[in-house]
Image (cartoon, rainbow, N blue to C red; front, top):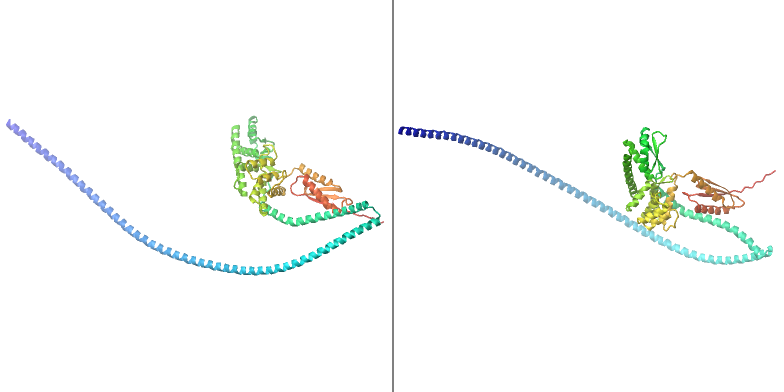
Length: 543
């Protein structure tokens, strides 16, 4: 039993020793592997550190080289800038010296001019003294002549009185009969003298005024040359083919009825191939209808809902164009401030015509003409341009509300706080009220020039014939007129008079009377020339 225990203890001790040795061997192997791994890691870390250190050292060397290069470039740039600055200073000094020399020369020239002017003034003073002496001498001579004239007038009065008494004695007439003969003689003389005075005064006035007026008007026309624009009350839209007409009409005419109801314009579809006509007196509605129809044709989808959509888009585009047209007119004339509603009304004139003439183009032209003439005459150019531009503003809505375009224009100008001069120019440009300023007169003149230039306006045949007949009727209504002919499209009236009833001197007075009657009773563009012709023939036949 004791042996067994001893053996068991021995076996246990041996087992413990063997287990401890095996554990120790295993732990030793782990420690050796860990040490080996640590040594490998340390070797890798040392190698990486050496590589990075070398790279850092290379970078430091590169930075040193780059710094040296930059220092050299900076020194070179510094030297170049110093040289450039020295060169600029040298050039500046030379320029200053040159300017100083030029100024010295200019001052020297001015001094010479002043000396010459002083000499000229001295010379003129001497001449003025001489002229004063001559004028004094002439005044004395005039006084002497006045005394002599007074004496001769007294002698003439005495001789006339003596002649009158002798005439009474020789003619054996009583004073009333002699007075009648003398008055008849004086009447004929006065008519002759009156005609001569009228003719002479007209020539003098024309000689003084025509040249200046022509210069002012020619300058104004040249500076505001405008194209001739003629527009009608219809618009034509081209179609890609005749089948499109049926699509525009629609089933049972619903498309065309919808289009006419939305636009307020008549759509005329006739036998003309590939064409439809839009007819309407309102130019803005006509333009909206034209744009909408062109969009519908291009889109191809034509039905009431699509028509309404296209009409709304076209109306918005036209409204935008109207405002842009008004702003463009203001920019063209240099007007910088105007009420927005007035600008919009001004733009509406782009689609308004008068006798075939575009009213906006006409208004711009009148504004330019008025401004140039006002500048030449020393008046306020800005007010003149504004008055000329707005003189027909009432035509923008005269087809929508009652009243003449003059009355509507005056109300609009007052509503949007235009100046009194502009309001009076609008009110007086057709002579409805008195003109209160020279600018109103210039607006009338510019309006006449713009309307009367060839091709600016068209006129119906009926009005044209009526104007010619009225001209001839006025001329034939005067006593002594045998025939009257309106020629050159009504710009001249030639009047034939009976030579036994109208004398040569009387023709001047007759021409003036006909001119006044035409101005008072007729409305016409431009000028009308009145030519009175008198011819007397004496015929004798020798047998």
